[in-house]
Amino acid sequence: MAESLVDKREAPRSKLQHVRYGVREPGGRDEAAALHDRLAPNGELLVGMVSARNVPEKGYDVFVQALARAGDDVRGVLVGPHPGDPFLALVSELGLDDRLTIVGRVPGVNAYYHAIDLLVLPSTREEAMPLVMLEAMAAHTPVYASRLAGVPEAVVEGETGRMFTPSDVDALAALIADAPQRREELKRMGDAGRRRYEELFAPAALRARLEELYSNS
Image (cartoon, rainbow, N blue to C red):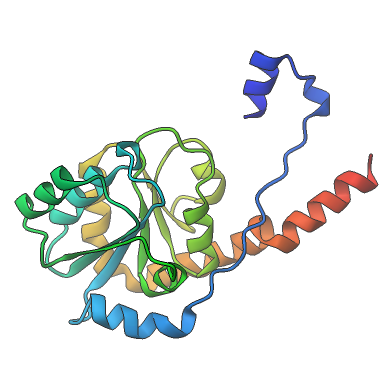
C-alpha cells in the first residue's frame, strides 16, 4: 500500500508511517468444545474457512478440492456465504456432503475460530491483511494461508502457520492431509500466533503505536 501511494499518488515517502490493525479478540471460547464435537463427532481434525464475501477469489474451489484429497480423518466447515449452486454441485461431486458443513452467515462466527483446529485462507488474489486471519490468531488457531499480499506479515512459516502458493490445490491438500499427525505442532503454532497477535495486532498494540506517532510528531 505504501509503495502504491508513492508510485501512483506521488506521496512523500518520508511522511508514510506503518500502523497495523488493532483487532479485537473473538469471544465464544465457552462454546468451542461442543461446537467441535458436533462438527467433528469422531475426533477428526476440523479445518475451517471463514469469509464474509462469496466472491471466487476467496478460493472456495481451492479449499474444497484440497479438503477432498485430505482423507477421512479431516472434516471441514465453511462459515459465511458460498458462491451458489455450482459450488454446491462441486461439493457433491467431490464426495464432501458428509465431510463439509456449510454454515452460511451466522451472528456467532467467533466461536468457530476457537472450535476449529486450523483456519485455511485460500484466497487466490486481491487480499490486503485479512481480518479473519488475525481473529483466528487471537483465538490461538494456526493459519494455513496463500502467500499473498500482507499475509506473510502475520503468518510466519512453520511458526504461526503454513503458507502455499495461491491456487496450488496440491500444496494445500498435502498440508491438510499431514495436519492430523501434527496436532501438537498445530497447538504450538496456535500459541505462537496468539503471541504474534498480542505483539502486533491487538488493540493495545495499535494504541501504543498511535501514541508513539503522536508523541514523535
